Image 1 (cartoon, helix red, strand yellow):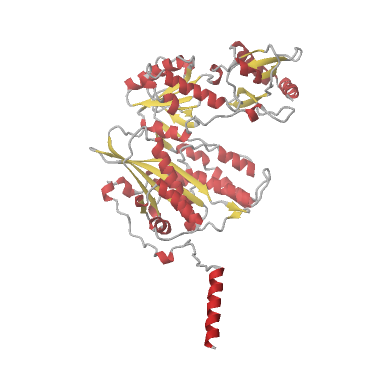
Image 2 (cartoon, rainbow, N blue to C red):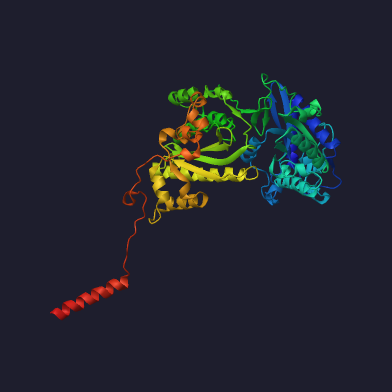
Amino acid sequence: MALSRFYNLERKLTADPIIYEEYKAFMNEYLQLGHMKLAQTPGNYIIPHHAVVKRTNGKIKLRVVFDASAPTSSGTSLNNLLFTGPKLQCDITDLLLRCRFHEYMLTADIWKMYRQIQVSPAECSYQHILWRNDPAESIQEYALSTVTYGVSSSPFQAIRVLHQLELDERSKYPAAQGVLSSQTYVDDIIAGAASVEQIVTLQKQLIGLLGQGQFELKKWASNCPQVLQNIPKDDQVVELSFDPKDDCSIKILGLHWDPANDIFSYHSDPCVSRPTKRSVLSAIAKIYDPLGALSPITFCAKCFMQILWKNAYEWDQPINDELASSWNSFSTQLPSVSQVKIKRHILIEQCTDVQLLGFSDASQKGYSAVVYMRLSYASRPGTVHLLTARSKVAPLKNNRLDESLSIPRLELCGALLLAQTLLRVQNALSSITHISSIHAWTDSTVVLSWLTTQQVTFKVFVTNRLNKIGELLPSGQWRYVPSMQNPADCVSRGLLPTEALEHSLYWDGPSFVQQSPDTWKSPQYEKIPIAELPEQKTVAETLHSDLLLHQQRTTNGLKNSHH
């Protein structure tokens, strides 16, 4: 199988000389760096490989991918037999949330991280590949001697090595402690500090710490010029200008960051092809938004995709003119998301109190949750910052909306989503700051009545979700908010890109949260009487058959004695 795939690869490369030269350069570098060696004995498993090519602005970027999931003649692959290990990498959203609370931030890439970690020689026989530089040469068998992309256990192995390095060297590099374990996503480091002196010290200790494991840091970027002043230009992401007028945005974990202005931003291109289910899904996937800030917009896109599913379109079947017009109206506005600018740094050092504020909502289309942080200060007004938002479309059943999911049920799903999101944000920021209190709002009087009613048994769907919400967020922390003041309403109904840009309710939260928490008064709402609450479980009392028989006999005996 591996030999057949190698011949197939070689034919494709021969047909494209430019790609073939790039491929050979990649393999030759692998060999020169000692990351693969000519095998002395036949391997126990041969890993096929192929090229992944990315063309941007006339430039070709090629990566060789090793396919350890390829089955052998027995039908089993290397990845089938390997234990992948637990997930050790940080969550991207949590990492981006944490990075907003450092005044100064740096990012760097651990250069060829996987390939700096050697595999035990005894295990290398399971990492053999086939290669030759020219079809006229004989095919050689090589052993990959380092942790390899495409092998299922590699992510765990590489990250576990970083964590161990941090543990082993913690006494020598105290300023860098926690960076590799909680401020790194695979090989991307995003760390920060409160002052220039602290971040320069952090940088030096990071370089020293990773140097102990023979790792190098490249692709440096920072909003602090002092961090970059001793970094060679070739080791920086781009030559940054710290003039705020210049656009020098870079990508960190897929999100655009402009270090000079210290803002996050978004970019999206309009769809030019005839809409099909495949092209629509591709366009949605390109709206990369790990923080969920564009949730009102992405929710519209997800709802449109659901319409295509309900209409049972094939992947490449052109959609009808009415739907195509609707999609084009949306997609032509997508480039306007580049106007969304989110200030990265949230000033937390001088605050006296930190609160999390959450809002949930639902519509027939789906449900949503939006989370803000409110900071109080001794000598200045408090500030409110959008942290994250999430949405889910209402599920389908047999290509139709599930009719069993009433609006109150969807509102309850939204409340659960909010409780989960608030807890997640609290946990993500636990190492950054102490959150004194959490407040949650919903505009559903049914959900509020469910949450505060103890003596009634509800149906399983409602009971399960109420129990989960109760575990995450006590009922006393829930409040009522009118729909017109609920920012989650913007998400659960969706907004077109141009509508979302100026929607202050969503970006800033309702006006009352800008005021002191002492002034917050939950608006009056009509609490639903227990007898009128929906979803109550019917309790039927049944009599045992033996008891009924006994009663019948007793009745008959009374009748006989009467006669």
